[in-house]
Image (cartoon, rainbow, N blue to C red):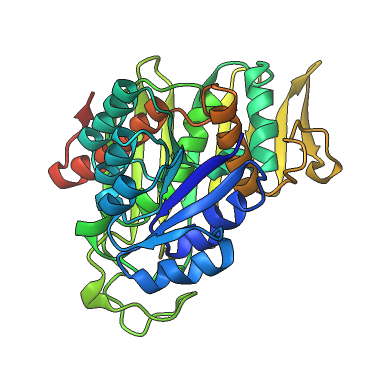
Length: 357
């Protein structure tokens, strides 16, 4: 069976992740490309499109005209819900880029549309498909760490502010590093804990470095006048069962402790961190131990022929879920909880008060 796929939003994430990953899957044909800047759609069509593929500037026209099976939504956060819901209602399975939506209300509407139409919905959290993530999830699932009662979710950059597109636009994105990269770290951490029942959240966002002119930055200086989102954010989540999660996210922070899409776990039988590769620690027969995992030696159950690239594994897993009618690895209900917690951190920062669920 061949699945016909349409791409809505042909910018950086589509070009860097979705398109090259889908192109490796022989059961997939990419037949529709949509972008409000139609030249961008035409550019990627030349590389990834079939002979009869088409380009569009309006996603509604694409959904009405094309007979598709799957749609990948790769647009700014503000339009995730609108386009995903329209795509589901047009009869397509949908992968939406992270974060699920700007608000939890929008995210819930996406889940409702998926259930109403009977079409699958997943969110692009490719961090789950990194070799160390797959291994650690198996360790957690087998109970090697015991009950994970506390964790840290890390998404810290020293100076790596994305200066292109709408990343600095709060209206278009809903926030800065917290919703952009903090969302990956939080998703990864909750997945390891298998805990999606938050009780309350305390959080604070900062705009301390965003107004720096001619700042050192991986992608060149940012424009302080356009920097309307936070430059760093921190949250503390208490779960219903008493477990806690500390989340740190920054694009610009005076710290040398830089790590992104990482988690640190504290369990009753052992702990784990991703600080330098993957390390499991614990106590055995009255002595402490550290177990360094050799991730390059294989042994993790990867998808045949997909290699070990997280983006490719994510795409392969998603397409397999459609072909085999199974649940996707990233369930929309899980992504909703991530969005609810991020939203609560922003709200807590505004009100200087805890947000209860």
